[in-house]
Image (tube, rainbow, N blue to C red; front, top):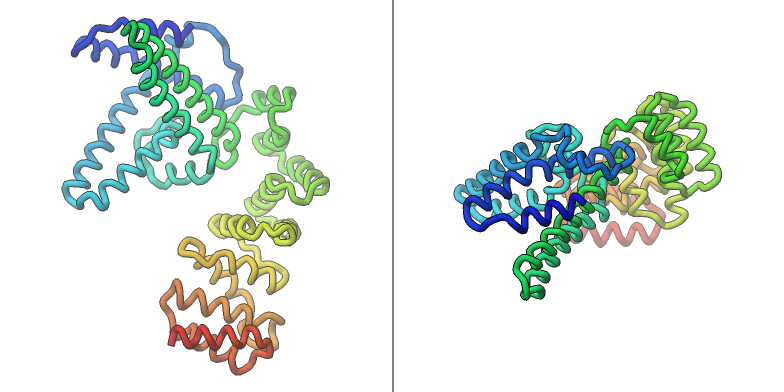
Length: 384
């Protein structure tokens, strides 16, 4: 009914400035309804088909906030292009366009204009949602394509074409906001977004999410119950990514380093055993960014993780990890592997050839591993 009424009314609007003014006026209840829809789904609440929810909402000022924010962004991009040129202005515009769904999600959660355009928060949401985030763009593009196709194909009646276009557009936009709400609910723990435990309990009865009971315990502060359930899940399936990572992070937040080290060690060993190298490195990087120190019990495991972090984003964490292990013979069995990898990182990412050459010289003089010796000699010849 909402789709039908909105499509019908907007299709009957006159052309010109009056029609534009009335359309903008119509957007107030629509945007309020869309944010209400997203918020209800994000909170795990049941939806109803009551038509009055289209007109009664706690998010009445969302359209004003969005209008003001995107007007500011447009001016910011325009000034950036004027002052610094297209080389900076266009990437900035691309980032804000990419961040539109993330900005709407932040606005729903925090009701704050400045948070809405915070690039750190926008980037965090894009990274957190991953591929699912870009599915939101597919929905948006599909909406535009359908609008164009109907405008071209249905030419026997302008009213019919406009009505169908408006109906399909509002339907897809409702799907888009529903998906955003669902993603917030799925990641509410990582987003620090509170969901009522009563709603989680209700959803648990419908078995929407196998981690629901754990989320309930965490929301209610029943950490021991959450830990016991997570341990049971890990015992049943050592490669349960969600259970392992949630338990490791939970122990880390509580400062329970002994248990965190034990679970992390077995989890990383399982990941490497199953050849999930890049995934293991990414999770180690995540732990380091949360200031949770974990050092593998074996040097070889540490080298394997650090090897996957040879890139501009993660090399500092790789060096921090390797610094925990000896680069001198007699200490660690794989001291020369540690030294060789550190030399690569220092030369390629820190521009410190002197320190790299020093490590390589030590390996060449004292290593008994012919393969590592040969590699060290070749790499020293390159950077000298």
